[in-house]
Image (cartoon, rainbow over all chains, first blue to last red; front, side, top):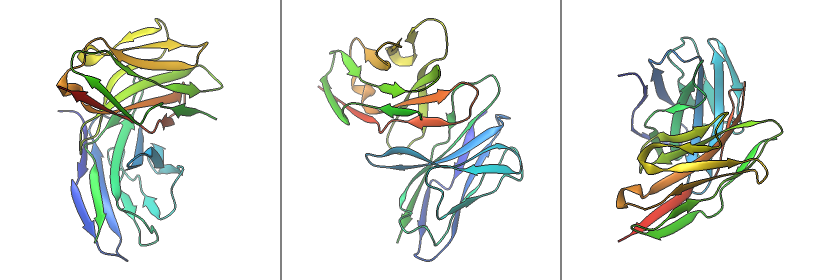
Length: 112
Length: 113
């Protein structure tokens, strides 16, 4: 099946640790996104990438980093600089011929 | 700058009653408009979208929305609510030719038996 796979579904992080969230797509879409979701705040854009080896900061990029070495992969690292990382993280992709974004199932990150 | 406003963070309806979820947007260019649904601990699923053409758009699960340019609105409706419609609904806007999407803060729909 074509789609977007996020892993893991649940992730626990100790304070001061970096963690990496995986996002893989087999839709052959050019653009990929990371959103953070908090209750009552909707989805906020962290980073997005339109092509391989290029990415742009979104509205809340501080404390996060990304890479786009392959078209199908767009991992997100939550660094220790992110002071409040507990949230639900959603990866999405969109491409030519599609106006809508396609979403993965999300990763719930909890700081313990 | 684009923005999306969803009126009502929580909406309750009785089973079988009309569902109306409100969305207003601002955009300096003709927008693309979307409604997504999210079930607990899952990603977002597209319900329907407006890009160009007919302003009344039909989506999955009996939902529809009407693009009203004069009111800058894109309200979501369903004639008869079902228990399975209980979820969170997000309105989103993007400008044609760009890759950026702006989401509203969401409306949680509760369906009462």
